[in-house]
Length: 135
Image 1 (cartoon, helix red, strand yellow):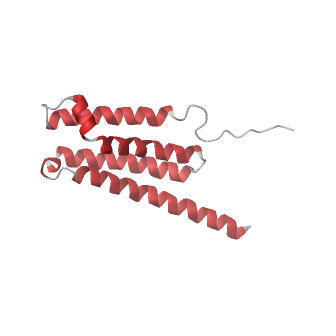
Image 2 (cartoon, helix red, strand yellow; image 1 turned 90 degrees about the vertical axis):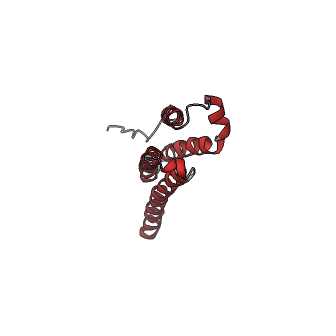
Image 3 (cartoon, one colour; image 1 turned 135 degrees about the horizontal axis):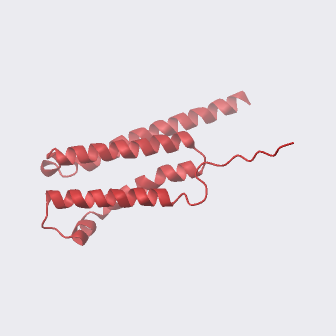
């Protein structure tokens, strides 16, 4: 007889991955800020847009928390939503749309992220309902 131990998804030091993702996002965000307005300092950027900063932090950690709770579909949809949202954010910012409409890149980021994360929630809820119906 052989004992098989299944390794759980995102064990041990799982918090390092979203923290690294957030720090990478913070670096790119700061570089983009220097490109758009080089006269502002680093701390002026952070203090002036702390809501955006904490939204990036929360959206980086949320998929990994869902993955730690063993919701793999929710993790992958949230992670993909984060990456696609960042692509939309930087595309709109670099196309000079962000200079004319300040919040449009952030709103696009949040819409893409929430849409993908919500799709993952619907899939996970559907699996739960199907599992309960078959019991």
